[in-house]
Image (cartoon, rainbow, N blue to C red; front, side, top):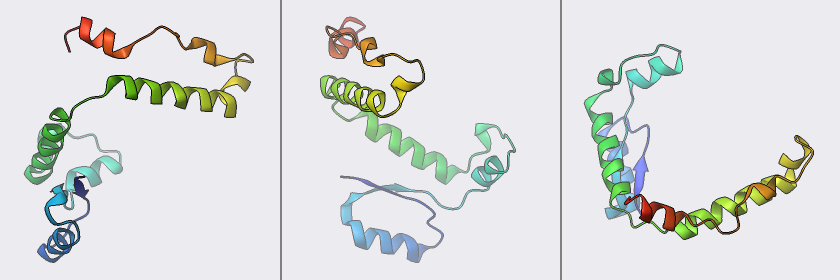
Length: 117
């Protein structure tokens, strides 16, 4: 398991996180003027993002790209999520069973293999 720390403001904060998670720390984010501006509705170019945050995002993308994907498991979890939401609330809006949208013979791994992804 890897950890991404957020709102790290001081070296002491970072030392605390490292002490807690040992080698599990993937990266961290500090305070960001870019993020604060975006929260206030100021749309800034991505090039305005601080170098530290950019490095953290790069580390996160690299880690995700290096993960082994279990596409069948991912698809089955998505189907189960859809079914549960259909029963809990989604069916009431259209007035029909939206689980019929699920294609029983669909295979995400087969599709991705055919696309060479």
